[in-house]
Figure 1: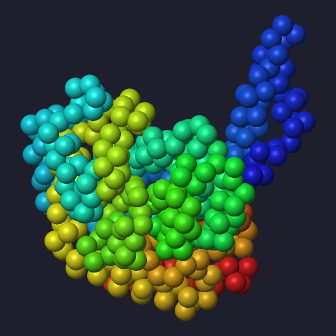
Figure 2: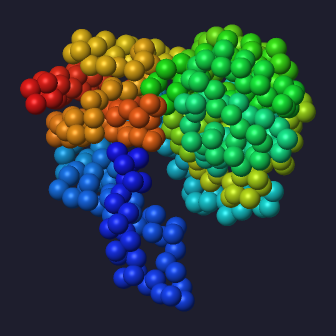
Figure 3: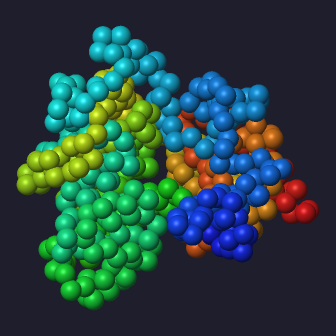
Length: 424
Protein backbone atom coordinates (compact mmCIF):
# COMPACT_ATOMS: atom_id res chain seq x y z
CA UNK A 1 0.00 0.00 0.00
CA UNK A 2 2.68 2.52 1.04
CA UNK A 3 4.71 1.74 -2.05
CA UNK A 4 1.69 2.63 -4.17
CA UNK A 5 1.45 5.98 -2.40
CA UNK A 6 4.83 6.96 -3.81
CA UNK A 7 3.55 6.32 -7.33
CA UNK A 8 0.54 8.60 -7.05
CA UNK A 9 -0.68 10.28 -10.20
CA UNK A 10 2.10 12.71 -11.07
CA UNK A 11 -0.16 14.61 -13.43
CA UNK A 12 -2.49 15.53 -10.59
CA UNK A 13 0.43 16.81 -8.56
CA UNK A 14 1.73 18.78 -11.56
CA UNK A 15 -1.62 20.44 -12.04
CA UNK A 16 -1.65 21.55 -8.42
CA UNK A 17 1.91 22.82 -8.31
CA UNK A 18 1.05 26.30 -9.58
CA UNK A 19 -1.55 26.75 -6.83
CA UNK A 20 1.12 26.10 -4.20
CA UNK A 21 3.19 29.09 -5.00
CA UNK A 22 5.37 28.00 -7.93
CA UNK A 23 6.47 31.00 -9.99
CA UNK A 24 8.94 31.62 -12.76
CA UNK A 25 11.22 33.22 -10.18
CA UNK A 26 10.77 30.49 -7.57
CA UNK A 27 10.15 26.95 -8.90
CA UNK A 28 8.07 24.68 -6.73
CA UNK A 29 10.17 22.37 -4.55
CA UNK A 30 10.37 18.82 -5.88
CA UNK A 31 10.70 17.64 -2.27
CA UNK A 32 7.41 19.31 -1.34
CA UNK A 33 5.82 17.96 -4.52
CA UNK A 34 6.80 14.40 -3.56
CA UNK A 35 5.54 14.87 -0.01
CA UNK A 36 2.29 16.29 -1.35
CA UNK A 37 1.75 13.27 -3.60
CA UNK A 38 2.18 10.97 -0.63
CA UNK A 39 -0.12 13.01 1.61
CA UNK A 40 -2.88 13.30 -0.98
CA UNK A 41 -2.80 9.58 -1.74
CA UNK A 42 -2.89 8.75 1.98
CA UNK A 43 -5.85 11.10 2.45
CA UNK A 44 -7.77 9.40 -0.37
CA UNK A 45 -7.16 5.95 1.07
CA UNK A 46 -8.18 7.05 4.56
CA UNK A 47 -11.52 8.61 3.55
CA UNK A 48 -14.37 6.53 4.92
CA UNK A 49 -12.07 4.00 6.55
CA UNK A 50 -10.89 3.37 10.08
CA UNK A 51 -7.19 4.16 9.85
CA UNK A 52 -5.06 1.56 11.68
CA UNK A 53 -2.18 4.03 11.89
CA UNK A 54 -4.13 6.74 13.71
CA UNK A 55 -5.76 4.76 16.50
CA UNK A 56 -6.09 6.81 19.68
CA UNK A 57 -5.80 5.12 23.08
CA UNK A 58 -8.36 6.98 25.16
CA UNK A 59 -7.49 5.31 28.44
CA UNK A 60 -5.16 2.59 29.71
CA UNK A 61 -6.71 0.08 32.11
CA UNK A 62 -3.69 -2.15 32.70
CA UNK A 63 -0.74 -3.72 30.89
CA UNK A 64 -2.97 -5.38 28.26
CA UNK A 65 -6.28 -3.51 28.41
CA UNK A 66 -7.21 -0.08 27.07
CA UNK A 67 -10.16 1.97 25.86
CA UNK A 68 -10.39 2.54 22.10
CA UNK A 69 -13.42 4.19 20.53
CA UNK A 70 -15.15 4.15 23.90
CA UNK A 71 -14.82 0.36 24.13
CA UNK A 72 -12.81 -1.78 26.52
CA UNK A 73 -10.21 -3.47 24.31
CA UNK A 74 -7.72 -6.26 24.94
CA UNK A 75 -4.33 -5.25 23.59
CA UNK A 76 -2.48 -7.80 21.50
CA UNK A 77 -0.37 -5.03 20.00
CA UNK A 78 1.53 -4.07 23.14
CA UNK A 79 5.14 -5.00 23.88
CA UNK A 80 4.55 -5.25 27.63
CA UNK A 81 5.73 -8.84 27.52
CA UNK A 82 5.91 -9.29 31.29
CA UNK A 83 3.35 -6.69 32.35
CA UNK A 84 5.95 -4.79 34.37
CA UNK A 85 4.73 -1.34 33.31
CA UNK A 86 1.91 -1.91 35.82
CA UNK A 87 3.85 -3.85 38.46
CA UNK A 88 3.16 -2.12 41.80
CA UNK A 89 6.82 -2.13 42.81
CA UNK A 90 7.87 -0.47 39.55
CA UNK A 91 5.15 2.15 39.89
CA UNK A 92 6.08 2.85 43.51
CA UNK A 93 9.77 3.25 42.62
CA UNK A 94 8.89 5.76 39.88
CA UNK A 95 6.49 7.70 42.10
CA UNK A 96 8.93 8.07 44.97
CA UNK A 97 11.74 9.10 42.65
CA UNK A 98 9.80 11.70 40.66
CA UNK A 99 8.66 13.37 43.88
CA UNK A 100 12.26 13.80 44.99
CA UNK A 101 14.12 14.36 41.72
CA UNK A 102 11.48 15.93 39.47
CA UNK A 103 10.31 14.97 36.00
CA UNK A 104 13.43 15.17 33.86
CA UNK A 105 17.21 15.40 33.83
CA UNK A 106 17.30 18.46 31.48
CA UNK A 107 20.84 17.66 30.28
CA UNK A 108 22.97 15.02 28.59
CA UNK A 109 25.16 12.59 30.51
CA UNK A 110 28.29 14.58 29.64
CA UNK A 111 26.77 17.81 30.94
CA UNK A 112 24.85 17.87 34.22
CA UNK A 113 22.62 14.90 33.44
CA UNK A 114 24.85 12.13 34.77
CA UNK A 115 23.38 10.97 38.08
CA UNK A 116 24.46 8.24 40.46
CA UNK A 117 21.26 6.36 39.58
CA UNK A 118 22.28 6.25 35.90
CA UNK A 119 25.62 4.79 36.91
CA UNK A 120 23.91 2.26 39.18
CA UNK A 121 21.58 1.13 36.40
CA UNK A 122 24.57 0.63 34.11
CA UNK A 123 26.28 -1.51 36.74
CA UNK A 124 23.12 -3.54 37.23
CA UNK A 125 22.47 -4.14 33.53
CA UNK A 126 26.13 -5.17 33.12
CA UNK A 127 25.75 -7.57 36.06
CA UNK A 128 22.47 -8.90 34.65
CA UNK A 129 24.29 -9.87 31.46
CA UNK A 130 27.49 -10.94 33.18
CA UNK A 131 29.41 -8.29 31.25
CA UNK A 132 32.13 -5.81 32.15
CA UNK A 133 30.78 -2.76 30.37
CA UNK A 134 27.33 -1.23 29.92
CA UNK A 135 25.97 2.04 28.59
CA UNK A 136 22.37 3.22 28.87
CA UNK A 137 20.66 5.50 26.36
CA UNK A 138 17.44 7.48 26.27
CA UNK A 139 15.61 5.13 23.85
CA UNK A 140 16.09 1.70 22.35
CA UNK A 141 16.26 3.24 18.86
CA UNK A 142 19.14 5.39 20.06
CA UNK A 143 20.90 2.39 21.57
CA UNK A 144 21.35 0.93 18.08
CA UNK A 145 22.24 4.33 16.62
CA UNK A 146 24.84 4.85 19.32
CA UNK A 147 26.44 1.41 19.48
CA UNK A 148 26.62 0.72 15.74
CA UNK A 149 27.59 4.20 14.56
CA UNK A 150 30.00 4.48 17.48
CA UNK A 151 31.81 1.28 16.51
CA UNK A 152 31.94 1.58 12.72
CA UNK A 153 33.57 4.32 10.64
CA UNK A 154 34.33 5.17 7.05
CA UNK A 155 36.39 2.45 5.38
CA UNK A 156 34.73 -0.14 7.65
CA UNK A 157 31.96 -2.51 6.55
CA UNK A 158 28.63 -3.43 8.14
CA UNK A 159 26.75 -6.58 7.15
CA UNK A 160 23.20 -6.62 8.47
CA UNK A 161 20.21 -8.93 8.13
CA UNK A 162 17.71 -7.80 5.51
CA UNK A 163 14.89 -8.02 8.09
CA UNK A 164 16.66 -5.77 10.59
CA UNK A 165 14.84 -3.02 12.45
CA UNK A 166 14.89 0.49 10.98
CA UNK A 167 17.16 1.67 13.80
CA UNK A 168 19.84 -0.78 12.65
CA UNK A 169 19.65 0.41 9.05
CA UNK A 170 19.72 4.05 10.16
CA UNK A 171 22.67 3.40 12.46
CA UNK A 172 24.60 1.71 9.68
CA UNK A 173 24.03 4.66 7.34
CA UNK A 174 24.95 7.13 10.08
CA UNK A 175 28.28 5.40 10.64
CA UNK A 176 29.59 6.20 7.16
CA UNK A 177 30.68 2.58 6.72
CA UNK A 178 30.03 0.52 3.61
CA UNK A 179 26.71 -1.24 4.26
CA UNK A 180 25.45 -4.52 2.81
CA UNK A 181 22.30 -6.47 3.71
CA UNK A 182 22.42 -10.26 3.65
CA UNK A 183 19.45 -12.53 2.96
CA UNK A 184 17.41 -13.10 6.09
CA UNK A 185 18.90 -15.72 8.42
CA UNK A 186 21.24 -16.92 5.65
CA UNK A 187 24.81 -17.68 6.83
CA UNK A 188 25.81 -18.65 3.28
CA UNK A 189 24.95 -15.14 2.11
CA UNK A 190 27.02 -13.69 4.96
CA UNK A 191 29.94 -15.82 3.75
CA UNK A 192 29.38 -14.47 0.23
CA UNK A 193 29.59 -10.88 1.49
CA UNK A 194 32.90 -11.57 3.22
CA UNK A 195 34.22 -13.27 0.10
CA UNK A 196 33.26 -10.35 -2.16
CA UNK A 197 34.13 -7.53 0.23
CA UNK A 198 37.23 -5.45 -0.38
CA UNK A 199 37.24 -4.50 3.31
CA UNK A 200 39.01 -6.77 5.80
CA UNK A 201 36.89 -8.91 8.08
CA UNK A 202 38.65 -7.33 11.05
CA UNK A 203 37.07 -4.00 10.01
CA UNK A 204 33.57 -5.45 9.69
CA UNK A 205 30.51 -5.49 11.95
CA UNK A 206 27.90 -8.22 11.52
CA UNK A 207 24.57 -7.07 12.96
CA UNK A 208 21.47 -9.19 13.52
CA UNK A 209 18.51 -9.53 15.84
CA UNK A 210 17.72 -12.27 18.31
CA UNK A 211 13.98 -12.13 17.59
CA UNK A 212 12.76 -10.30 14.50
CA UNK A 213 9.93 -7.98 15.36
CA UNK A 214 7.79 -8.41 12.23
CA UNK A 215 7.63 -12.18 11.67
CA UNK A 216 8.65 -13.01 15.25
CA UNK A 217 11.20 -15.62 14.14
CA UNK A 218 14.45 -16.27 15.98
CA UNK A 219 17.69 -15.27 14.30
CA UNK A 220 20.20 -17.91 13.21
CA UNK A 221 22.72 -16.48 15.63
CA UNK A 222 24.87 -19.58 15.96
CA UNK A 223 25.60 -20.08 12.26
CA UNK A 224 25.98 -16.40 11.40
CA UNK A 225 28.23 -15.68 14.39
CA UNK A 226 30.41 -18.63 13.38
CA UNK A 227 30.87 -17.16 9.89
CA UNK A 228 31.65 -13.73 11.32
CA UNK A 229 34.23 -15.08 13.76
CA UNK A 230 36.04 -17.03 11.05
CA UNK A 231 36.69 -13.69 9.35
CA UNK A 232 37.60 -11.77 12.52
CA UNK A 233 34.47 -9.61 12.50
CA UNK A 234 32.65 -8.19 15.52
CA UNK A 235 29.12 -9.47 16.14
CA UNK A 236 26.36 -7.16 17.40
CA UNK A 237 22.99 -8.66 18.43
CA UNK A 238 19.84 -6.68 19.15
CA UNK A 239 17.97 -8.43 21.98
CA UNK A 240 15.01 -6.01 22.03
CA UNK A 241 12.43 -8.80 21.80
CA UNK A 242 14.47 -11.51 23.52
CA UNK A 243 15.43 -9.87 26.80
CA UNK A 244 13.40 -11.09 29.76
CA UNK A 245 11.89 -13.96 27.78
CA UNK A 246 14.61 -16.34 26.55
CA UNK A 247 17.43 -17.92 28.54
CA UNK A 248 17.77 -19.30 32.04
CA UNK A 249 18.24 -15.84 33.51
CA UNK A 250 16.12 -13.95 30.98
CA UNK A 251 19.13 -12.48 29.19
CA UNK A 252 17.78 -13.41 25.78
CA UNK A 253 18.44 -15.69 22.84
CA UNK A 254 22.22 -15.24 23.09
CA UNK A 255 22.10 -16.82 26.54
CA UNK A 256 19.54 -19.42 25.45
CA UNK A 257 21.85 -20.61 22.66
CA UNK A 258 25.02 -20.45 24.77
CA UNK A 259 26.64 -17.81 22.53
CA UNK A 260 27.69 -15.25 25.10
CA UNK A 261 31.38 -15.70 24.22
CA UNK A 262 30.67 -15.41 20.48
CA UNK A 263 28.71 -12.15 20.58
CA UNK A 264 30.76 -8.99 21.12
CA UNK A 265 28.02 -6.44 21.83
CA UNK A 266 24.40 -6.91 22.90
CA UNK A 267 22.01 -4.01 22.36
CA UNK A 268 18.59 -3.88 23.96
CA UNK A 269 15.68 -1.76 25.04
CA UNK A 270 13.79 -1.07 28.25
CA UNK A 271 10.54 -0.46 26.35
CA UNK A 272 9.54 -4.12 25.97
CA UNK A 273 9.96 -6.53 28.89
CA UNK A 274 11.25 -3.87 31.30
CA UNK A 275 8.14 -1.75 30.74
CA UNK A 276 9.57 1.78 30.56
CA UNK A 277 11.67 3.55 27.91
CA UNK A 278 15.38 3.61 27.22
CA UNK A 279 18.05 1.38 25.79
CA UNK A 280 21.42 -0.13 26.55
CA UNK A 281 24.48 -1.83 25.16
CA UNK A 282 26.67 -4.32 27.01
CA UNK A 283 30.00 -5.90 26.19
CA UNK A 284 32.83 -7.90 27.73
CA UNK A 285 35.47 -6.08 25.69
CA UNK A 286 37.45 -3.77 27.94
CA UNK A 287 38.35 -1.79 24.81
CA UNK A 288 34.72 -0.65 24.62
CA UNK A 289 34.62 0.94 28.06
CA UNK A 290 34.50 4.37 26.39
CA UNK A 291 31.97 3.48 23.72
CA UNK A 292 29.74 6.19 25.16
CA UNK A 293 32.25 8.83 24.11
CA UNK A 294 32.24 7.52 20.53
CA UNK A 295 28.46 7.69 20.25
CA UNK A 296 26.78 10.95 19.27
CA UNK A 297 23.27 9.86 20.42
CA UNK A 298 24.74 9.46 23.91
CA UNK A 299 26.73 12.68 23.87
CA UNK A 300 23.99 14.97 22.61
CA UNK A 301 20.73 13.70 24.15
CA UNK A 302 19.24 14.41 27.55
CA UNK A 303 19.62 11.49 29.94
CA UNK A 304 16.75 9.31 31.12
CA UNK A 305 14.48 10.82 33.81
CA UNK A 306 15.41 9.27 37.16
CA UNK A 307 11.86 8.02 37.73
CA UNK A 308 12.31 5.87 34.61
CA UNK A 309 15.70 4.70 35.86
CA UNK A 310 14.21 3.72 39.22
CA UNK A 311 11.43 1.72 37.58
CA UNK A 312 13.89 0.01 35.22
CA UNK A 313 16.16 -1.01 38.11
CA UNK A 314 13.17 -2.46 39.95
CA UNK A 315 12.02 -4.33 36.84
CA UNK A 316 15.47 -5.86 36.32
CA UNK A 317 15.29 -7.30 39.82
CA UNK A 318 11.85 -8.77 39.08
CA UNK A 319 13.05 -10.32 35.80
CA UNK A 320 15.96 -11.91 37.62
CA UNK A 321 13.98 -13.05 40.64
CA UNK A 322 10.61 -14.11 39.21
CA UNK A 323 11.07 -16.65 36.38
CA UNK A 324 7.39 -17.53 36.73
CA UNK A 325 6.56 -14.48 34.59
CA UNK A 326 8.55 -15.91 31.68
CA UNK A 327 6.87 -19.29 32.16
CA UNK A 328 3.44 -17.69 32.03
CA UNK A 329 4.30 -15.76 28.88
CA UNK A 330 5.42 -18.97 27.16
CA UNK A 331 2.20 -20.77 28.14
CA UNK A 332 0.20 -17.91 26.65
CA UNK A 333 2.31 -17.76 23.50
CA UNK A 334 2.07 -21.48 22.84
CA UNK A 335 -1.70 -21.50 23.41
CA UNK A 336 -2.24 -18.49 21.17
CA UNK A 337 -0.09 -19.76 18.30
CA UNK A 338 -1.70 -23.20 18.47
CA UNK A 339 -5.14 -21.58 18.36
CA UNK A 340 -4.30 -19.45 15.31
CA UNK A 341 -3.01 -22.47 13.42
CA UNK A 342 -6.09 -24.49 14.36
CA UNK A 343 -8.19 -21.78 12.71
CA UNK A 344 -6.09 -22.28 9.57
CA UNK A 345 -4.33 -18.92 9.59
CA UNK A 346 -0.89 -18.45 8.02
CA UNK A 347 1.33 -17.64 11.02
CA UNK A 348 4.84 -16.48 10.14
CA UNK A 349 6.83 -18.13 12.93
CA UNK A 350 6.89 -20.61 15.77
CA UNK A 351 5.47 -19.67 19.17
CA UNK A 352 7.14 -16.67 20.77
CA UNK A 353 6.40 -13.28 22.29
CA UNK A 354 5.65 -11.64 18.94
CA UNK A 355 4.38 -12.89 15.60
CA UNK A 356 2.34 -12.09 12.52
CA UNK A 357 -0.48 -13.54 10.42
CA UNK A 358 -0.24 -13.15 6.65
CA UNK A 359 -3.18 -11.51 4.90
CA UNK A 360 -4.20 -11.73 1.23
CA UNK A 361 -3.97 -8.08 0.22
CA UNK A 362 -4.63 -4.71 1.80
CA UNK A 363 -8.43 -4.87 1.71
CA UNK A 364 -8.58 -8.32 3.29
CA UNK A 365 -6.06 -7.27 5.92
CA UNK A 366 -7.89 -4.07 6.74
CA UNK A 367 -11.28 -5.80 6.94
CA UNK A 368 -9.81 -8.49 9.17
CA UNK A 369 -8.12 -5.93 11.42
CA UNK A 370 -11.32 -3.87 11.66
CA UNK A 371 -13.34 -6.96 12.53
CA UNK A 372 -10.98 -7.79 15.38
CA UNK A 373 -11.16 -4.24 16.72
CA UNK A 374 -14.96 -4.26 16.58
CA UNK A 375 -14.82 -7.36 18.80
CA UNK A 376 -12.56 -5.65 21.34
CA UNK A 377 -9.23 -7.10 20.16
CA UNK A 378 -6.40 -4.83 19.02
CA UNK A 379 -3.49 -5.99 16.84
CA UNK A 380 -1.08 -4.04 14.63
CA UNK A 381 -1.63 -3.85 10.88
CA UNK A 382 1.64 -3.73 8.94
CA UNK A 383 1.97 -2.80 5.28
CA UNK A 384 4.81 -2.62 2.77
CA UNK A 385 7.42 -1.23 2.57
CA UNK A 386 7.70 -1.85 6.31
CA UNK A 387 7.22 -5.60 5.86
CA UNK A 388 9.31 -8.39 4.32
CA UNK A 389 8.51 -9.39 0.74
CA UNK A 390 5.77 -6.80 0.39
CA UNK A 391 3.45 -8.73 2.71
CA UNK A 392 0.31 -7.45 4.43
CA UNK A 393 0.50 -8.63 8.03
CA UNK A 394 -1.47 -8.53 11.26
CA UNK A 395 1.17 -8.41 13.97
CA UNK A 396 0.40 -9.52 17.51
CA UNK A 397 2.33 -9.68 20.76
CA UNK A 398 1.74 -11.81 23.83
CA UNK A 399 2.14 -10.88 27.48
CA UNK A 400 2.38 -12.68 30.78
CA UNK A 401 -0.41 -10.30 31.80
CA UNK A 402 -2.86 -11.91 29.35
CA UNK A 403 -5.31 -14.18 31.12
CA UNK A 404 -6.73 -17.41 29.67
CA UNK A 405 -9.94 -15.44 29.10
CA UNK A 406 -8.03 -12.85 27.05
CA UNK A 407 -6.48 -15.60 24.91
CA UNK A 408 -9.83 -17.29 24.38
CA UNK A 409 -11.53 -13.99 23.46
CA UNK A 410 -8.83 -13.16 20.94
CA UNK A 411 -8.98 -16.59 19.29
CA UNK A 412 -12.77 -16.34 19.11
CA UNK A 413 -12.44 -12.96 17.39
CA UNK A 414 -9.84 -14.30 14.93
CA UNK A 415 -12.10 -17.25 14.13
CA UNK A 416 -15.07 -14.99 13.42
CA UNK A 417 -13.00 -12.63 11.27
CA UNK A 418 -11.56 -15.59 9.35
CA UNK A 419 -15.04 -16.93 8.60
CA UNK A 420 -16.14 -13.55 7.24
CA UNK A 421 -12.98 -13.27 5.14
CA UNK A 422 -13.48 -16.76 3.73
CA UNK A 423 -17.07 -16.02 2.80
CA UNK A 424 -16.18 -12.72 1.11
